[in-house]
Length: 477
Image (cartoon, rainbow, N blue to C red):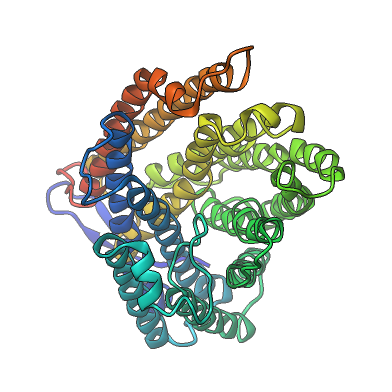
């Protein structure tokens, strides 16, 4: 099912220009979600640059923005903007796959504002008051859930996220139940329901530290190396069907195999987080074995993307979206697959866990797998949401420049952090007289400056990406 297209005459060229109307009007609710996602992405990068400077200039913006607060804002904005992207993708993708209007567009708009306001107030809370004060005034004593990495949100915010997720899933589920069921929509819904269900473990905060870490990973790992991969696969499949014209049956076969490998490797692969937290030693065997297989679904996504583009039956005018789709496959394989494998085996991880090698993997994996697939979806859908099949050639050139700037910058960030991590392991954890943590960090300053420079390059690419939406075409478009 495609959006309807009409042709109007461009008086400058005498050529027919495509004006595209949404197949279902309710798909328009995806637009504010995508706009919010990009805005929050900008915020995440700003705080990333602040953190980068604090690595080398320890009192930068202190005490106004301490390092722990900047890090908390940076990681929370990452999660929230990706969730906005997933929700926007769901509101666009599900009506088109289901061949019917969204169950309740009004509910989608209400959900948007509730989520945006709650997220903004939470960030303001991080920046405005000490974290302990924030915990006290938000009722954390009644249901303690705060204080854990990536799950720092106040309890009241977590409850709000659950309410938003339930209304979002109700809206999409009712749409699917009343419409056509496709493999893409089913995989997407399975991933979104899994996202909501596993987030509930953020409310479980046992006193025993081993139990706490054991179930903490049920949110963090089973999100990013489990159900989020289902969402990623569905979004990538949807875009590739649209831009290549390849038979849906071919795409679905690939999707089934990728999802099966994701679930097989990702669930038991949680064990690579259980090596050193006090769990039984058999997790070192299971975690290593299944984690070694985790690059397979990402490699299959790369093959899938290039195979679909090579078999394409049409030359879609949105070449920028095709570039983002191909980049998603390659970068997710490198970041989540290769860099994850480099330090996932227990004997290696014994030396590398908690070092800058972990940070290098995290940066490229999140960018390659999830940031890029959300941008792919935005790149494909936003022109249609604005009434045309693709942006102008000039706009797409700017967007492609942004792609290469951000992607190359992320490769540099990853390489610099990898070098820093290798040196950190050697100086801090090996040899007869290992250095202390802070003495080691002081020796890594050169790589941190290089990482900051690459971060500025990445920010420039993001600015170009935003500018591309405002670039108009010339007479040849």
